[in-house]
Image (cartoon, rainbow, N blue to C red; front, top):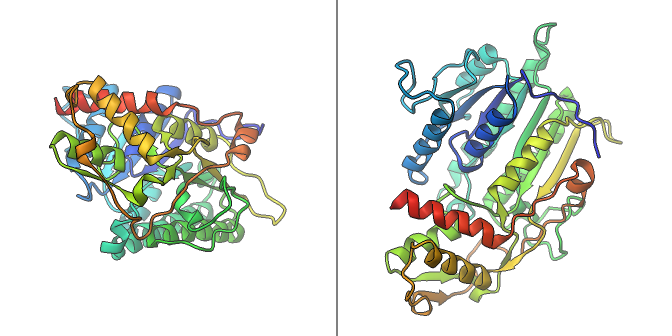
Length: 375
């Protein structure tokens, strides 16, 4: 196992996509685990999906910190500043806005950066490619430049960014036939613009690590799910349609397999990685990439069957729900892949950890949250 070389207690941590699914869970876990940590979150709060869910995630962070009743809070119920005086503060903004980002780095002086802000989704990249260019390419380049210049301005008081952790995706494996997917595999065959932007992030991070010495770690997430997740994800979309009595389409005639990873496992992995900035590899680069997946792909038909059982159990669907009449098996969609399957051996070896939440347990927590959230 690798030894920790970053103590997050007392550190200033900048989290992009802080109102997002993974970002909000990460902020809450960091606040629980590290007493003196200071977190600045940023999110564009765009309407790619229901903004209300993003607002509620921020309100949950605010409630956790006991912010209720204060009159100096921002529009989302949390302190709005870049000064770093609060345990958690939030700025509504876009990482593609270089001027705003540079201001944050100049005033907040982050020591650890976790970049989770991105335009997500495979199918939406076909409809709106420029959203991916703006957030995933321009935005990520702005993050790298800000990290680079933080090192230029290093002093006794502020050493600059000590570790950049960023979200990649299992989508980078594209049409690879070899499974399970290993970070040693070539990933030169993306089948969507989203996948291409994520692979570009890895290449950009490598070059900045080589040129400027920025320690960076990329994390390839595998189909993250859980309570308060993204409504565009299959399990959430299926639930919304079933509740309305609408039919659901199961692609590739149900023959796709996905390595579904519960959000708590993803967050535990991120927190572990944040505390270990990579040392120089054989190429003289402070750079690592890991898979974070459940290491247990599930057939999509089995997944949907477990989902409907848990929705009935939670009272989201009635016990006599006619599921068979609401599902339709259809061909593969453009940009999709048949199987995702993570080799997490390096993660386990380096951190003594790998995701382990059983699918049924994770979907049960989602179904219970859905019942409570939508009443």
